[in-house]
Image (cartoon, rainbow, N blue to C red; front, side, top):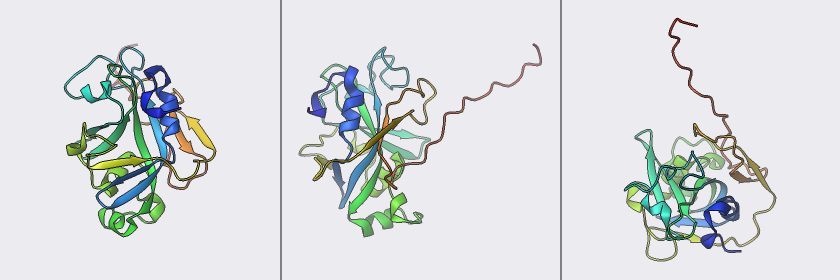
Length: 202
């Protein structure tokens, strides 16, 4: 089954299928070890497309096989693979990977990494080692873009699933997928809702 043409209702299958694929950009190749699925309009309150199409999220609505890149905390970039039918928002966040080629260059881009296992063990770190930023938004992954995606040489192996990370809504939906036991997977931090200041009244 091709992950590039799955309906949004099966975006979780698309995210899972991406594990083991190879993402290459700017002299570095990463084997994807962790992904996270996000559906579209009305179906997933954690999705950027939950309230409809905007200039920011338009790429999520297709065609499949393109990058959706956004910035968090005003510092870090995150990359998603668009994977739904045209006109139906769906994307898989690329959460972590293992650097399999261009390790020295990856180390230069992430000099604070203590070991190679943590070079790309988070969505922002992954983008750093690949040398990608917002300029990669809405670019193709299969020819002509700054990044390219290729199928795995071997099966990813056993896969685990669990709750998503860093979202305030639907965080318990088990749409985060990772290669079981892989040391490059990001550390899970359970969502903690912010407490509202006490008003001093019951």
